[in-house]
Length: 299
Image 1 (cartoon, rainbow, N blue to C red):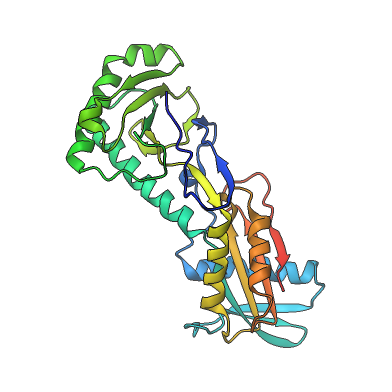
Image 2 (cartoon, rainbow, N blue to C red):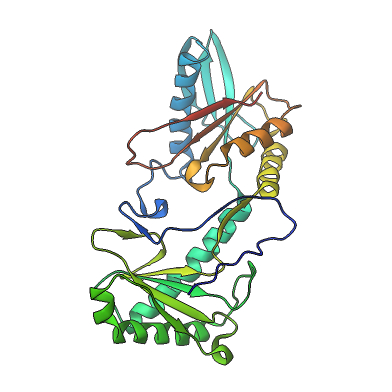
């Protein structure tokens, strides 16, 4: 049975920890089509601009004629111009990212997808299989095994899937396996297999019907990481050449910690060069039943 790592970043104030459900009807957010790509700066500014002028019109009852993107939006310059109440106002746009969480997420994704590929090179099952891999330590330490060792482990896992494929196909239950501690102590000590029900999608990383959840990949957010991200935005954007700063964030990355984010931003931007600071939080997904935007005026 998989043992979760609980000694995550000792000394920090954990706000939330979330056990990942093995599968769902819609699948994980990272596999669903995004509303827009965060790296496409012009697309981001266009959508945020529309959301912001809707807020100004509906909530603050401003008379907004239009907004436009600034072609000369170099460092500290406005990204947008908003024509409101007869004035042309400069607006900077930036994304709130909890950097430690994103860094761990990206490392987990990379390792899990690599293991998934190694397994599928040996055996590709006819059904979706979730594989939970347990590390031999009770901490958030990321495994640093050699690729050759991961390939050996992947081959062993692939062989166990092939050997038990009939049972995996007919029964929706966990199959547990121990790894040789001497051989694999650097990366893992055990794993389990669980078939994903028909019409469901795995919530883990992977492809080719092989999906991986690694023991260190514990979904957790700390208050100190949020405060650090708020400080970075303040340090990077304060004293810019705009009257307004809009800080937007993808709530799929925040695990319902918006209020902590807003609190950290309010504390950091008590004294700022910006006349107004706003927070916009929403789920960056194309297909969503109801698109809710969390608007908050920070200053």
